[in-house]
Amino acid sequence: MLVVPALGVGAPVAGIRTEGGVLTPPSDPRQVGWWTGGARPGASAGAAVVTGHTVRAGGGAFDDLETLAAGDDVVVRSGAREVAYAVDTVEVLSRDELARRSASLFGRTGPGRLVLITCEDWDGTAYRSNVVVTARPAG
Image (cartoon, rainbow, N blue to C red):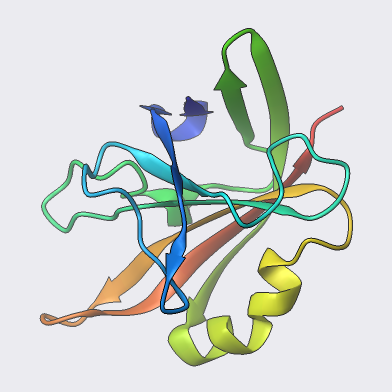
C-alpha cells in the first residue's frame, strides 16, 4: 500500500516491469505500480520507482501528484513493514528531459530514495510531460 496523506491517497501496489523500455502503470487507475527492476522501498541505495495514473476526469491515484510539497509524507506498507519518506523535490519534466535524466532519476546507485511518477500536461490527445516526485527516507 502506498499512502500519501497530503493527497488522501491509499493505493494498492503491484509489481510491474518495463516493456520495450516503457514503464506502464497498472490498468486500474486507483492502483500504483512498483518497478521490480529497481530498488525495493527501504533499500539503502537506488531508486524505488512507483508509477500511477493521472485521469483527466479524476479517479487516478496520482491525479494531484504535482501539488505535493517538500516535506510531505509518503509511506510504503507491505504486511507489517512500513517505510516512511519525506518529499524532497517535485518536478514537471518534458518527455525528452525525462529520457535524458532517467539514469540518474531511476538508477540503482546513489542514496536510497522513492521516486513517484505520473503523466501531466494533457493537450487533448496525449500527455506531454511527467510529474516526478523524489522522496528521501524520513527520520
